[in-house]
Amino acid sequence: AQTVTQSQPEMSVQEAETVTLSCTYDTSESDYYLFWYKQPPSRQMILVIRQEAYKQQNATENRFSVNFQKAAKSFSLKISDSQLGDAAMYFCAYNAGDSNYQLIWGAGTKLIIKP
Amino acid sequence: GAVVSQHPSWVICKSGTSVKIECRSLDFQATTMFWYRQFPKQSLMLMATSNEGSKATYEQGVEKDKFLINHASLTLSTLTVTSAHPEDSSFYICSARGQGRYEQYFGPGTRLTVT
Image (cartoon, rainbow over all chains, first blue to last red; front, side):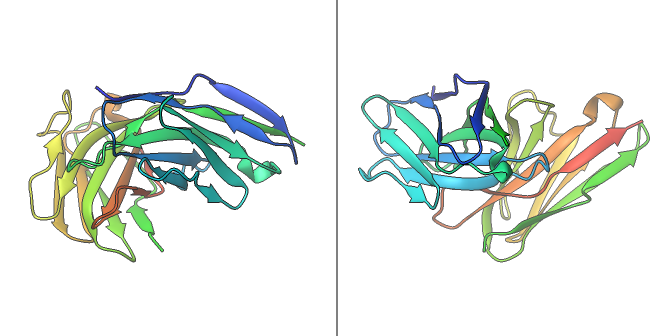
């Protein structure tokens, strides 16, 4: 069964600095999708970034980028120039690219931004 | 784009009554909708998956007769908690995915309190 592991329950970073959140996953599939979602205190879940496993290029969205290491089954999220609004729970999620379309979720990492 | 609404945002009901939560995709057709439950400081727990016009598929341990899901159109799914009890108090979140997409877009959630 596929699993997603986020080993950092909590991370903190100084405002304007860079922080990297870790995520590893286990799968025997070769084609799949990976996502990072953000859940701020409002509890609205927001899609931050997505990565297709067949793409070698790492996805980027403005200040957010990923380091996708397929062989190592690692999918870390880098947040550059951290802002106070980045404070949230961050969840890593995996989709097997199959017909049930379900997401397998990590336990989440709480990101604290120090002003 | 990809906006999902959810109503009500919070509801208080008495034990033994039923409550309905609506989830709508506002600017896309939701081929599949998902219902989650989230306990404090935890990740999302998938309750059921529904495809438009089909019966919902419930996860193991979720009582289908208690949590009734209807996905009557490509933009609307409803979750009815029947004969609610205090242990059903929780944060319920819906999500939706569009045709050919693997990412899910989330509603803002509904906080249910059963007294």
